[in-house]
Length: 221
Image (cartoon, rainbow, N blue to C red; front, top):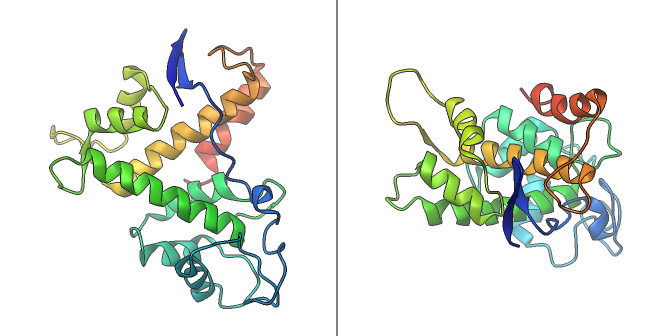
C-alpha cells in the first residue's frame, strides 16, 4: 500500500487487512467445525499448532477466552515479555467489537499472533545495529514501511513518552515499538472510518472526536 500526505493527515491509501474474528468465520470462542480442544475447532483454518498450544496453555478454565494476564503469559514464550499496558492496548484493538469485556478468543488471538510476527520482522529490519532497540529515526522509517507517514510533530510526542529525562537519546524496545505502532494504527483506522474516500481530511463533531480518542487513553493505561 502506498503512503501519502493530504493536509495534515498521512496514512496508507489502501485499507489494512481486517483483524476481526469475522474474517475467520467465527467470533470469540466459537466458529468452525470438527473436533478440537473445546469439542470443536475455534481457530482459523491452517492456524500454526504453536499458536493453538500457546492459547490452550493459558486458557486453563477452557472458557474459550483469555484475559490480559493470560495473554501476557502466552506471548512471553514466543515474542516478548510485554508490559500490561501494551497487552491491554492489544486486547482493546483485537477483541471482537461485540465483546464487552477486555478479553479475546482463539480467532482474535490467532490474528494478533500473526500481526506481531509481521511487526517483529519490521522491528528487526530497522534495528540495524542489532541492539534490540530503535531510535526515533528508525521508528519513523519502520512506521513508514507499515504504511504510516507520521508527521515529525506526532513522532516527537510519541517518542517523548519514553524519555527518562536524563538527556539521553530515546530508544524503544520491541514492547514500546508495538505500543507506538498500534496507537498509530488504531487511531488511523478510526480516522479512516470518517474518511472513507481516503482524502486525508474529515469533519468530526466534538462528541465523535472524544469517542474516537478517549478509549486509547483510558482503556489500557
